Image 1: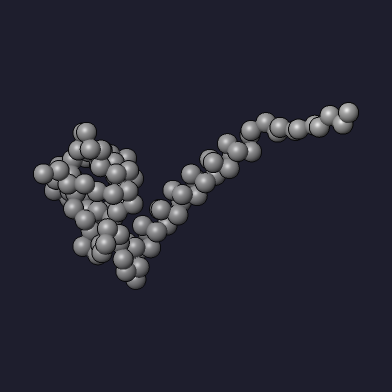
Image 2: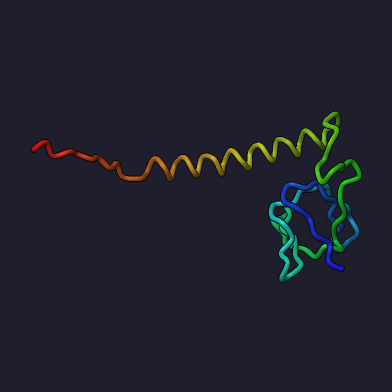
Amino acid sequence: MMQHYKADSSVIFTDEAGRQIDTFVIADTDTHTGLTHINHGNLKVAGDWLKLHVKTACDYHMPIADSFSFEMIRKLRDKYAVLDALKTATISQMPEISVLANAS
């Protein structure tokens, strides 16, 4: 059975050397390939290389009293700040449309 991870979930990635690395999911698990896009190394990995972080509750990392949580929040804030800036830049580059009414 394929493990499915949601975007922004905190996960632990186990690399080929057996090292466990705290990271988060960038994009949901692809249902066709079974790969999950994670932040660490911008990798797409199989679900059996991942497990939910031990402090995860209801799909999301909960207590923010530790340094890992603060780092995760900072990364997510930075990620969405970039996405928001791109949207704002795209909108500001759109040509202005002026509508003139004929008063006849």
